[in-house]
Image 1 (cartoon, rainbow, N blue to C red):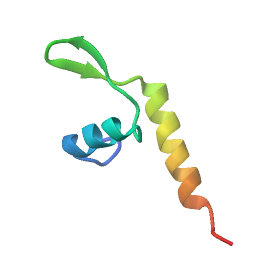
Image 2 (cartoon, one colour):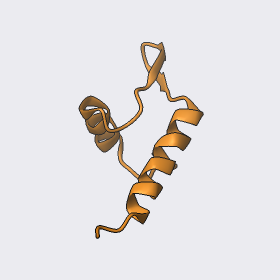
Image 3 (tube, helix red, strand yellow):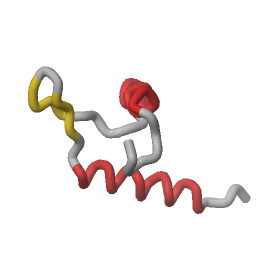
Image 4 (tube, rainbow, N blue to C red):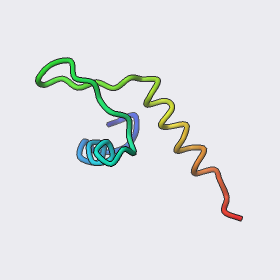
Length: 54
């Protein structure tokens, strides 16, 4: 949550919409994300934000 600047509910909402990397379950109360997938997601947001509509 701190890394991407979103609340838990926003992350899970975007996951369900396919707009955020899926978490991996390590147990009943433990979810993790692959760091490389989060890095790629952040990079794609930065690239999209950097585009200008012409």
